[in-house]
Image (tube, rainbow, N blue to C red; front, top):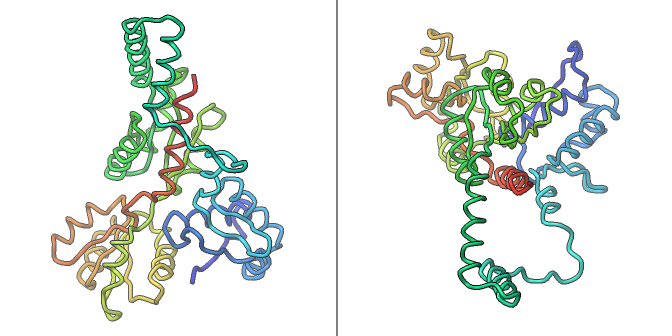
Length: 330
């Protein structure tokens, strides 16, 4: 069961804390597509706060199309399903079957021939259009930003292959400088980041007219199945980059696996403790920023799994649709 918590001493508004925590749970896979979130009054009672605060957080999440508040059914994680439906447009009656690309081209060619154009003129026109589109498309690009190079490279490649768009990998720490260098260039279509850095990226972007899209990363079903196959008595080790993340990750891992696992934790920078966790574990889990380093530390002695080793397919589909829509705009 997910452990919900807030810091009432923090300067951050409570509704934003709930919003960010929910996005964090979604990003890590603790909340999956279709999962029901706690009711407004239920969560308010648990956190000892006003129910309107929870409602405001849920409304913000619904506006970002991460959840849907359904009367009588509660609040459900949608992972952008509703947004994808809107992109397709409303259906009125029985939808007409769309023409295939070759049929569309044939229709237009026939129309040009009927206007008196020759085959040679049509061929030259098509080649000119294709050349212009290719040049224009090659100039446009997207920035993908994260805090670690291995994940940046992998996800940038995934995004580029899925959307057919040039993707420039940039570390979050270098993003502000990159945007200054790119100022005034119409070729930048937008920025893509993961749920972990969306607020940080939004702060860096500030008032700039640059769209920020969010990809959700989580644990792949294959990795989850392999980890879940270990005996309950297995000793799990967890190593991350940031100490403040350890308590949250411990709860997330326990909620993901559906049982209280025996788990030791450490940050990678504490070399002595990290080695102690390694020696006391049968299985190691690591966050993406330190995954490759932890694998080297383990040196094949025990299996090491990445906690977030895939981009959520539904999330990727939505980001792809948004980018392609922007790419098609003049």
